[in-house]
Image (cartoon, rainbow, N blue to C red; front, side):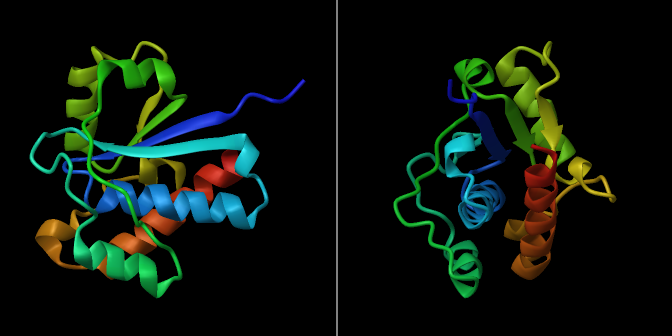
Length: 152
């Protein structure tokens, strides 16, 4: 019998910077570890502002610097049904967590968490849309995704 996949959904405000960075970093880490059949990974937004838009160009460039493509990814919104479909819903900051809980109708199974809560320095991943610091976001995302891979 095949082991059950761990389904992970990364979530941020618009699904054009932090959550797609986490989605594609995690996919790359899983690929390099030879564990693709153990995971299913996506990303989504809490807002509707960017629905259908591609990954923000500076986020795409930061991924490309590390040989990672986000081609074909467009923003979508988190739904209540995602709470059932995913084992882990990983928000980037406390505001995302509040919105995720509202959209999902709470978190009775304890599936909603922040990315950096998996690391030795729990906290929020700063939003590069506002900070302009895609390198700091890259480091946070990489550290968080590496910690998730270790745990699962």
